[in-house]
Amino acid sequence: MVCGQRSGFGPDALPDVEPPQNLARPEAGRFIPELDPEYEGFLSLLMNLLIIEFRAEIGFANTQAIFRTPGLFKGLEQEAELAADIIGRIRRDEEIHVYSLRLYLGELRELHIKTLDGKLLAGADIIDRFWAGLVHWATVEQPQLAAEAQYSVIRGHIRDQAGSPAMAGEIQAAFDNLIDPRCNRQFATP
Ligand SMILES: [Fe+2]
View 1 (cartoon, rainbow, N blue to C red):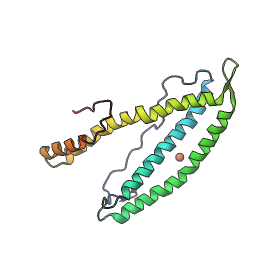
View 2: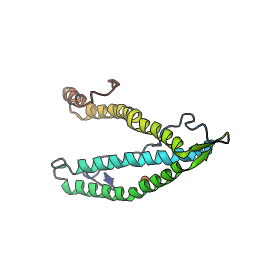
View 3: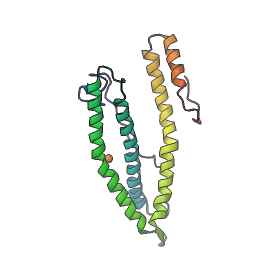
């Protein structure tokens, strides 16, 4: 957690992280072809935001738990607690987004929505279908892609900071042992 020059890892320990350009699911094609693209875009925005909020909440909770793991930040306990506390404030600030998005989408599920051919479709049918696809992307497809991308970054850090090729090999092997055996793809090993 970086806060100006301060960090749970010590001053200037890590560079600031560039946030990704886009956190939503890449939109390839139509998911609700029955509706005008403008309305699909509106529903897509609300649901993508809600997924982002849920995933952020998981990330916040995990990061707080790491900062509060006894013995993990030796000599930096106060900084680590401050970082965890700041994350707690962000979590509280974000809560209202989750409640409001759930409210909007819950209300929209109760409506009937006019389709392009003049019929009426239950909002729940449209929203639940889109939501199921989004959850699959966020919990199955995207984590695998993110893990693959991060693996090569971490591999580079190990190679550059291990001190010697032999030590790098040792650390890399220990790290590889942590790979979830349920992973359905092999990580690239350049
Ligand atoms: Fe938010």
